[in-house]
Length: 505
Image (tube, rainbow, N blue to C red):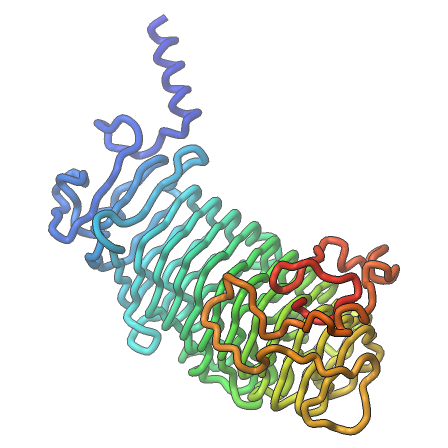
């Protein structure tokens, strides 16, 4: 009977996830503390804390444990949590700060924190430092590699040559309030070894990617992106900001983007702000937002882009990418984008694959594009495509409203207005939209209240002279259904008239 009782108790602990490499004298989860005045000969308690990351790396932490660094102090070295450590669904592992302020982990020329093949870990309230993208650092700041169920909140990451924060071949990741700045390749990046399934179920919310200039060692491709995601499925990027990225990319020829994805499926980018990001002069791309090569079943909606050197909204397919199809760009605003890249427009379409069967089924509707110096929409000389439709958009520009050849693309219910008072009219409406305050956006965070610069006057004809896309069978039935899953609210969250034109009502 006694043996049976002991067996049952052990089974209860296993079911609760309270197993792992605790000290023999420790019953259940415990806290481990690190202090600048600690000693590695101590037991790691709050009263007798450890001093170094090296001591922590030699100790396996278990489900329910917490690792707490003294706030306001700096700890040198790379913290590694691998498959020998981690949490459980019921008892996650916590790594954070205690006391006043954030603790700092200085990785020097290496990474500051790496999670490798672990799961159920929460990281919060930490600053991660590198020696600088041109001062010796050659790594990512924070890396999640083959991890599951990781939660991150309130992290400041700076000084790394590659990405500030890298998610690689990981699933079920929630990242919020990450501030990634002064890094090289990107502020935040999502990647995987192959295919679109290895990285999946990822949410990036309320994050900032600012002043990530470029990787000085990358001479073969773009760098200096804000938030970039590739080879992933089911990704949400929401209420994030990207600005002043890409100004020191060493390669001329293509360019970085504020917030974008490639080779990915089921991506939603919404309620984000991307402005004043840089690109290479005359580069083929770069910009504010982008659905790039191999993207499928994805949407960019309710975003604000302004004064990016590349286009505000990029629709791209590159040679060698998997097919690009079934994507939507809706209820976004572009202001004075594309003045440096070869697009010279707010929206840019480009396909270097040379094959229209690789680039098809795109719906662009209820966007507002305002460009005081260049065009509204631009097509590259290489832009073969099929079944592209532009509906109920407002296009205002000083230069020619469309640059390049629109081919067989469908344009219905759009309003075109030239600031240059050019002769001739575009098919559709040609009315002055009488915006409230166009061309003067100075927002530095996504508007928490309504953004009125591009509202239509209450009596505007543009409120009811577009097309009702919900009554167009070619858009709402069969394999080309691109709008069924999207709702009927405008940029500011207000109801949209059935035939309304533009992003704001």
